[in-house]
Image (cartoon, rainbow, N blue to C red; front, side, top):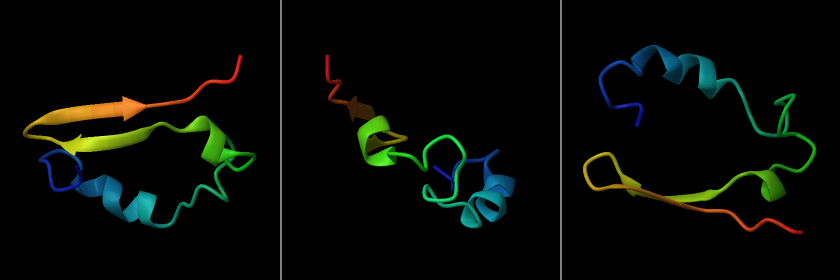
Length: 52
């Protein structure tokens, strides 16, 4: 994604950020983020299991 035009400046900023230090996801990112597969060219597929 970062190789896509328009995202070049995000690489530096996001390179300093981790899920463990992020204020939104640090309390259980493994339960809050979808698994994403695919590519820019072919599209993406996201899977997220939600407990009810």
